[in-house]
Image (cartoon, rainbow, N blue to C red):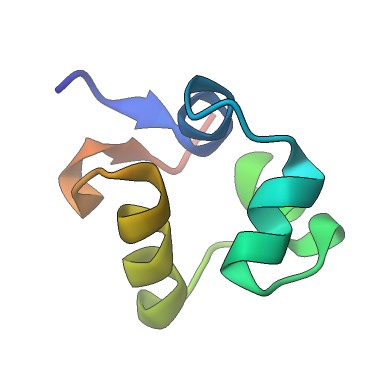
Length: 64
């Protein structure tokens, strides 16, 4: 798989930021901050993202 940013992964899954944040059990603002590299998810959250987006940690680009 090609490496993708968090936003690209979300959009590729057809999820809005509202839908993805609900599935991840976080606030929309928190997910937006992750997607814009203002803050970074912890290991537990990365694991949830891997499952939601169907990717491995190594396939996620965290810096824009």
